[in-house]
Image (cartoon, rainbow, N blue to C red; front, side, top):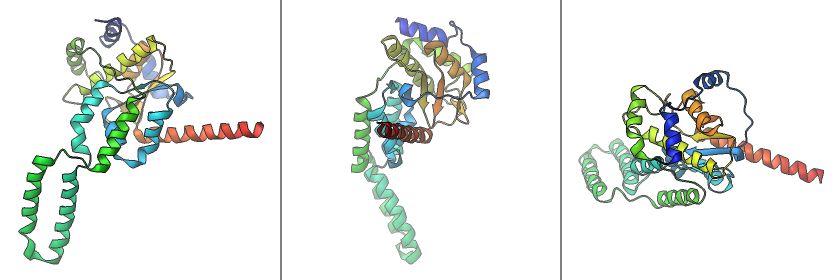
Amino acid sequence: MTDTNSFVCSVLWRQTPVDAVSALIEAFTLPETRISLDETAIAIDSNVFLNLSGKKEYTDALDYLGGQHKCTLVLPGQSLQEFWNNHLNAVKTVTSSLKKKIDEFSDELSAVDDDFGETVPELKRLLGELNERRGHIYSAETSARTLNMIERLKSRAIVPYADRSQLVGLAAHRKITKTPPGFKDDGDGDFYIWADILTGLYTAKKTGSQFKQVALITDDKKEDWSRNGTAHPILAAEVMAILGVPFQTWSLKRFRELVKYSRTATSEVASAAEIKS
């Protein structure tokens, strides 16, 4: 086991103590933080990959992550795996687009003439056969947006994998004790995402990266990650023990708002400097 894996696992096993009490107090008091995005190490959950690639309203967020963020950016290896596993069910493919049009057509047809009642099931049967053979083919727009997202993030991010051989027993133990994250799920994917994040950031910090807080962008609303936007205090305690900085969780919508605010503040500072000069 490497020094990084050894230390991270020692915290996750509680062989190295965490200050859970202080983290719990902060979760209730919500101390104000003024740490900028440029001083924040950002990690991305798998559900955020899906939304970044599939929704145009998050273009600004992707622009920031892919080219403007000056601090550490982490794409957990487990998140990439889950993105691929779930992507086909979450984005528009050629056949899913056809299905939507057939559904709309059948609704309009039934409102006009009942004599075509046998036509719609036959169309859906043919669509089912097409989906078996070509259901993996994305629409041109989806393919372009997904590829653009992956290429832009690849140029900026680290993609860490924690040593899985050291984590199997740990994942089972934390599930039994309801230690976050992931105890609300059947599998252990969330825990491996968490281990990848901690491993990647600890390695980055050892090699010179500097950051004043860690934020996970996630649209997972289960309480084993956060409650009403406040990170689970045990997760915050583990980040503090391993990295020495506070931890937050942000929804993608919240992150987009922070990006917008950051750009506005930067623009105002630039304008003030121009006036002063």
